[in-house]
Amino acid sequence: MCQAFCEPRRLNSLILGDNTNNVGVGGSIINIGSIVSNYGNIGQVNYAASKGGVLGLTRSLAKEMASLSWRAANVVDCVEENGTDMEEDIVPPTVRVNCIQPGFIHTPMAHAVPDKVLSEMTRKIALRRLGRAEDVANMSLFLASAERSGYITGEAFECSGMLRL
Image (cartoon, rainbow, N blue to C red; front, side, top):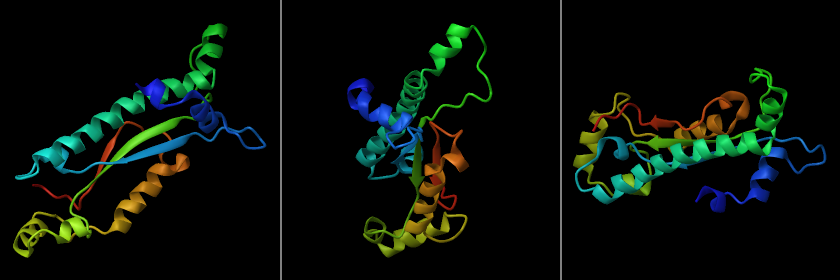
């Protein structure tokens, strides 16, 4: 499925670059899941299952993208032809795939929860507050940066203030 989903021209453009310098920049796919996929929650069977699917997609797509990135950059073929081991300094542009799993964040979805339940959930958060959209955005910025997270792929990161359901 990934080969149809990841059309080769788009992938090559992302990996190898289509700017005037033809310098590949790689990229980062950031999926948004939910901590509910890890712990479950009463009344959220369908939500937990769909967010669990996001986690499976993230991990599988990360493996596909890593393999396709190396192939597109011809690094594997070059190394195999020369009969050498992978060099530490051979780092082709890659497409990394990760998942952010927010907890309770100040959103319309969280505000639809009755006050008593929301108060109970807040007590289960180590930081004793709901998250902000900016918290998730900042984690996204970190994961989008090849400089700061260039060796991170296939991972799921909770952004929950350490909520335990």
